[in-house]
Image 1 (cartoon, one colour):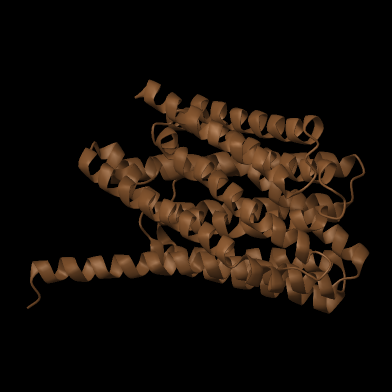
Image 2: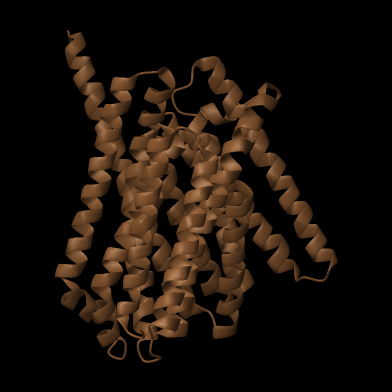
Length: 419
């Protein structure tokens, strides 16, 4: 017979394998998304691809604005709850999503009445709602420890979206065809979820709690807003590079920013999404020791990964430049790569690592203050470096590096004051 200790070890091994599968699913999703962009951009005529890109970007922005607060609330309030509370929180999350989806489609109908093309309004709204809904399902799956379900759904969604988008572009040669293929991929993904996620199908919307909804809104809206403001800092960085750097250097520097940002975001997001639910569960149980242990594991993996990735990008900058940049961009890309690696490493440290205690304590005002400080210091430092000191080379990136270091220091002062 199998002893209790052996069963514990077997269950622990299965849990570790499920977490590894979830991490692998993130990598697969990134590769599939990149492949979809590259292939569709070659299958569609330039004007059609421009339309496709515009609609997809608008849909992603709409999904972020409408549903990201619900995802933040799920990440913070759903892990580790009891059976009765789980039913209540699940119903409240579902009701929140459906309400926002209804408002989104109402806004799409208004845009349609104002003369906006139907493929942009209805297609964009459908993609935004499908992305928001499947993102929420994936978040709830990993928050309740269903990493195997999370990994399978992530793999299926990434595959179906890529196949659907490429197939639609190949068959029709139009932006509408590619979008319909993506929508078809989402429909099949939702069908897969309906067959595999039984807990989600057992949701009773009558169990939704107005009190929980108020808690979600108090935390979720500022947290999502802070995320958007942090994103604005990276947009300001791109505009500053375009405005102040020498014209010959701008494309290479922007390419460095675009390419370097992705691996940092992917690695840290994957680690955070897999480990953070256990931190939340321990915190809400009052398990101080378990919370500290989980936080130490999360911080060590995140900071170790950031440091290793930064050193790799700096150490192999020559080789990376040879393969990642074309001949016309290679010199500027290579010159900007080391500073860009430091900058993006610090940026993900601020937005993911430093922000964790504030998310855990649901200090939404502190999150908003940190995001505002990040945007103001980054924009101000770039403006001073470019306008007053006439910095027009890759050394312009030193300004936002100093700004982020200042923001990290101020956020630690704020954390100690709240402790």
